Image 1 (cartoon, rainbow, N blue to C red):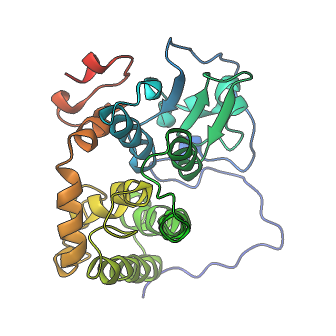
Image 2 (tube, rainbow, N blue to C red; image 1 turned 180 degrees about the vertical axis):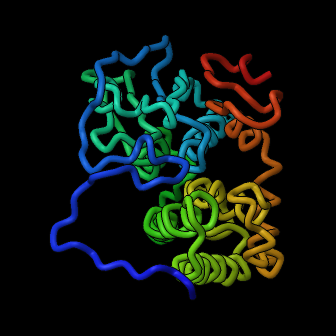
Length: 279
């Protein structure tokens, strides 16, 4: 290793940007940076998001619900450009004090309900529409096991491996090795589970799969951090099988396009206000 040794100060102070792709929006305090009212559309559900792995979890579920005929799942999806700090507007912070996408407002009830954190949104919608969440105790518990596994594990993949491998201004051996080891351990956890089960919670596709696929399914398909070769993703054959099966679902294809502003123009639907926006 050739990293420069660093001795932490007795009291840390934020004196300069840390560098990296997201340095302009990183700060050690919460709260809004500017006043802005969020737009509101005509549908019961108002989503404020971006097509990151966390963001597409919700749009995939909404599209899956609509495909099942749940008309109450119609939604407006408003674009939140996180690289420009939209998530720090007063309107967004009112919905999510943590200033992270996605954030949802259910206006079908009075008073309206705010829902933030992607896992919470998935659980809320699954319970609201009685879909993609088993009703029996064992099936529900197994689904929630994997949903919460994702919420606890993905920060090590994103903020750990993804940051140091893909986004950090300098590449250092120790953090890349440390988080690569953890990313591969997590893939092995999934591979072992999917060796014995079609989906994460059993034979049925659930919000557990919807939560995990945008991170780990897309990772092995080389659509997250362009790291499939580095991680030897081909070794995780059961994750690969699962990832490819889910990728073919029409609602998954549609959901990935919502709030997307990069890549092939045909895949970009920055805002979605009607089903025809995805045609």
